[in-house]
Image 1 (cartoon, helix red, strand yellow):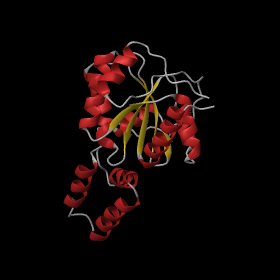
Image 2 (spheres, helix red, strand yellow):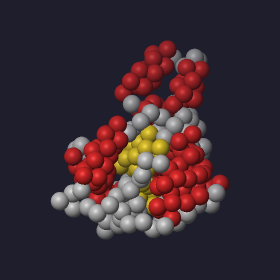
Image 3 (cartoon, helix red, strand yellow):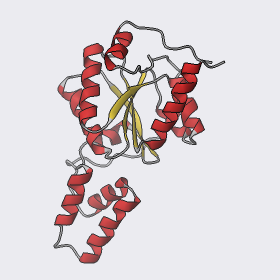
Length: 218
């Protein structure tokens, strides 16, 4: 029988995963306490969050919110980058922090506004302008036909990825990178047991560094 703590965590995960427009799955097993804290801080400052959760609980939560495909990017000890608003900012922060600090973090893939995408597309997303920057650029394109501009701006109401595609279609430069293909689902790996995230960051990080056993699950 699931413990009360596991049940409560599933309920919290359901809420978090249901609200998130961006869910990036990472394998964090190569990080120490200090590196993990620094990564969390960088993502938080960019408007996102970084959460460690047990794979089995993530899979249960994703099934219960009718997003079972999320479980396809849960591989190994998993930490999630989450954003309920601008998906570009936290993605930029993740990739920049990994590169600048030479962190041993593997990006498994992401769930972005209803679509699974692979690690290459996550990297591509990090090269795009953020929401505010993109809208400002579109507003600045006053030499374009008015009907064109209105159509593109209206697309913001249908989702941020639609705006990104419109920007690309109009010849916007996304860092020179070619748009990688949508990810094909990878085989689901055996469920490993990362440490569940605690309320206080310091307590959680110490527990992860000490290799504390996660809460038992059904």
